[in-house]
Image 1 (cartoon, rainbow, N blue to C red):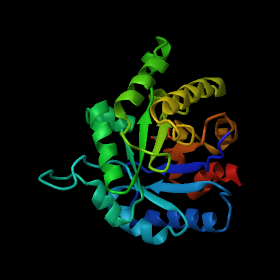
Image 2: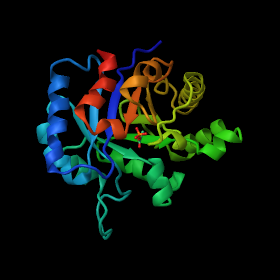
Image 3: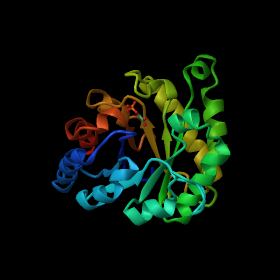
Image 4: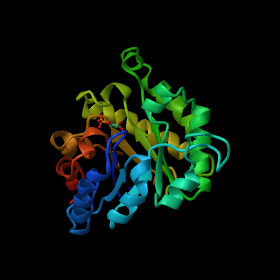
Length: 249
Ligand code: PEP
């Protein structure tokens, strides 16, 4: 069994002003004090805070929540992977279900963004996951399989790619799949990654995301092939986020 360093990642979504950097500083100081053990810790604040977060967050990584597929150009309001890197980010989330739904992002668009991230020297966190209807009609593995086949970047390595399994119905709802359901999907993703990326697929980190809280983190992070968490709501306060990342102490 490959020893994979877990990743505890927070996605602040469209939340956070400069005043919120206090939470980030508290997380960073706990990381430096060893409270998150062997985990790598990442916060993805809104783009407006990336540069300041990279300054304030010594000891942890900072990431973006999306990037454009092009390096530069006439795309008003968009941000390129290169710009994120220049601001101090080392990761970027692509294909979050909120972007797939709100902005009509297809698998191909997500792959293009992930490949742009790699070209810019960022590690891409590619999100996949089924809706409630898809789970109830038994399509979970088919949906996740087709998102994996369609949205992962070509030529990625275990150092430049993270996959986040985020059932859409579990995001922000307080609902989570059972540990057995998580194990089934993560084992399936691992199998697909090994197939697609020989020699690398066994080392790619697969995060679980969707209503991870301090109260369920030990159980969810203990599931086989779960190599960390992607955390939304509970990443907004240092106390809750450290209650999750702290399981790796
Ligand atoms: C997310 O949006 O990536 C997420 C997992 O959100 P939450 O933890 O709030 O469910």
